[in-house]
Length: 228
Image 1 (cartoon, rainbow, N blue to C red):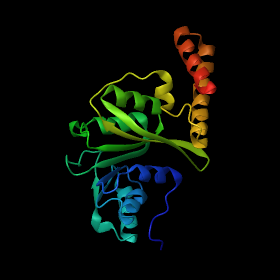
Image 2 (tube, rainbow, N blue to C red):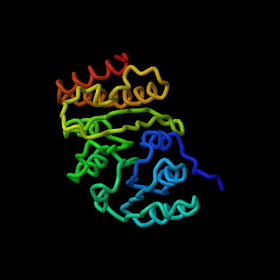
Image 3 (cartoon, one colour):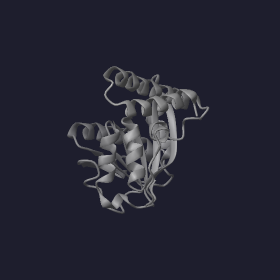
């Protein structure tokens, strides 16, 4: 067996944003590949593999044992961060979920409002709602990276609590800082978002119910397709 689990581009991007030496919690751990990689590589000294269902935890336990790092991880059957206590972790991964659910998990406990923590977030949907929720509640996105895995673009964010709130404009909410990035993965991500917004515009044109909303999304689409 290889010394480290193989991570796809999405999980590798998340792993790259975990800080060296950080105790890490992986929320919704699935097979446990990410937390096993972090422990086996030495990037994390200890980790929590958390899931709301028993079956993924059993798979994670197998993965951790296979890479001989089971003794450095704790498996938690819990909803989100419910069984994590303040001071137990430094970096928290919440990946592979919708943006609304990610924010619900992150925003629920008061102890996540700690400037020393880092959150590695990878929304599958509603990324614009997640960005707005973060900034509206005193969090900021420190780093943002687009990656392509199996021909599909994903976004990975590193966020932290700052205590300063900010209202995002539409372009910042939908694509963050990637609008003018020359990176090929970022361009593919922006193009995917532009297609979603175009579908919204076409739907509003057919309904003709809200001309103000139509104008807003049309302006956003123009900005996304123009790249500025």
